[in-house]
Image (cartoon, rainbow, N blue to C red; front, side, top):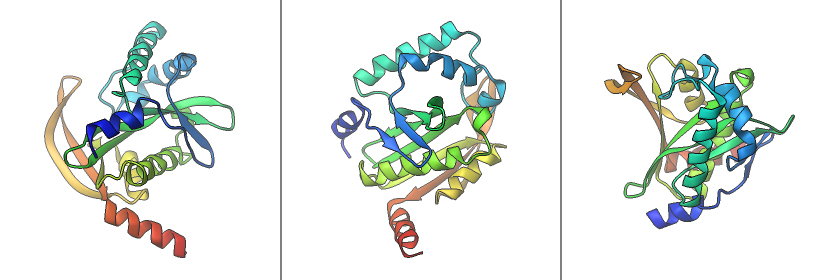
Length: 198
């Protein structure tokens, strides 16, 4: 997987779909929906960024994202809930290591939609895109210690918990312990065959 291939994939975000969701690029019309969940302290409790204090700040973030889309530097999809066409979060790649054919996924879901299996559904689709379209060898995800719900999502989509890196990241002024889970290409293929033969 070359850098040029990554740019090709994300200079124009592909539209992905699941039973209840579709994934597209983030748009200006999403600002209010993004502010709704980004201003909720529950959303950012286990994330690297803090709550959005104003809709103007959210607008500035969206403007930055749109500029990065143009150069293929931003790799997150907006999650649209088909039931009401609402933008309820994002999912995508927080890190792409072309040299080692590895990507790291991340996801954020509006707390109003927690407990519905949304994170599992969308993460599974993005992992599938990484293996099927980008042809990577490894997909990993990281989480802050204590975020058991996020680890549960990772395990539901076939990832294996690898362990904790103790106080390895400075987050909001505090050194935090970070958990890592991953799935390899060969494991993904085996899981797909198992699902097909069920």
